[in-house]
Length: 577
Image 1 (cartoon, rainbow, N blue to C red):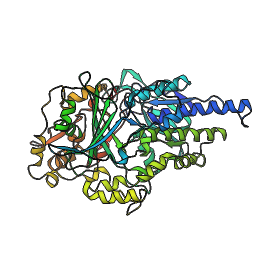
Image 2: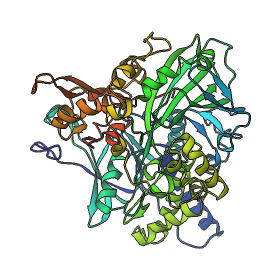
Image 3: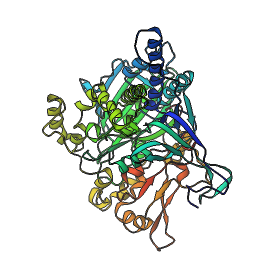
Image 4: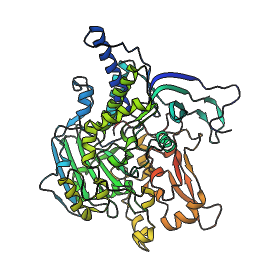
């Protein structure tokens, strides 16, 4: 029996919606709320005579989210530019938006192996005047309450696994079944997934959206675009003793501990004597041993960081990827019956490490395009949805992304090599010496062999450098996963699809030392003694550890792993981060 097949006598229920939003993050929730607000405003204007036209009848707006609750899978830095939030909810402060603290101080440091120095002037991209430090999981939970107050239907625990088509028109999605065992056989608690039909579908799945990935492949939405590239970030929340932390500081560092990869770190201070410590690394690194979790633990040994966190205790952890290709990696944003928003559309300013406000604004632009379609007798043909792209081009989404359209490409050449290129880009409004600056290789294909990157003893040297876990400030990966609250049904199908295990055993482990064992921030992948060939190792997938960062789908050098959605409700349970 395949996962699409149902037991005898069981049928899938069909539910009709007017507008279906796949993903309950900042983009999806902003789309839903803005759409309902705009419908209400339009109808009030028509009723009062301020505007000519027809009343828009009540719309069935549905948001589906794979997490067990809104916010549980939401992870970001997060320093929020409030521009989109202010437009969406002008009195957001009075409404109780959970913004922890306004940024009061900015600083950038360079870290050597055992020293640090502060840049005398904070570069403009690192200025955060008027921005807020917040938890994106808390913010999204709050946005969800605002949506529900407006009568929007939010269904957490429903993972979209298949887009439904009528020709090249998307007409809805199918959600995943619940209650199948490891072999796909229905258990006594089996629940068949739903067929959700809709007039228009908004894809807002976040980074490397698994459903939109399939849609973009089928409809060729990335033709002529730069390759998608990504960064991987990990972060911890550290509880410090009372009275030891000044809230409202944002500090970025470069240098230590990364040596073979481009990246940096961020430090945010919160009320309640909490420190957010995170590290971000480019996934187009050649380093097969790149391990952001490991680098984060090493970072905490540096004297500069130690002076800030000594006496603290890590209380939360998380990891995710973020799209880094920017403007020229964005797919075609619309089509017959659909639009795509936020991280799924590569809308992140990687120079400033900001994407929340861009996701929100793109969702709002999609909502305004839906209004146009509703007023045109529910026309959501490609000719109608192309208005979404025009709105993006006329909003600050383009203004901000276009300024840094070649930033990632330049910085990927290395810190020193990129400095003159970045300087020229700054002087030419982002153009630089070449525009567009191409990205020809995916992150998977940049990975090199261990010997070529680290030398004959490199693997042993790197594996011996990890600080000893103490359960307070230093953690091994499994202990960190515990802090995420991750849960999956152990007797459910493995959502991480290994295409060819022979490659792992015969080529990847001997020559690359199994990059998935390193880059995964959650100990999902492990090499164990082979049952097929004595003296070799096979890949074991501990899929119940998965925190849904999707790095494996991006960085495996043989593109041998496919990340698919697990049973709805599984995954991390983020609250603090």
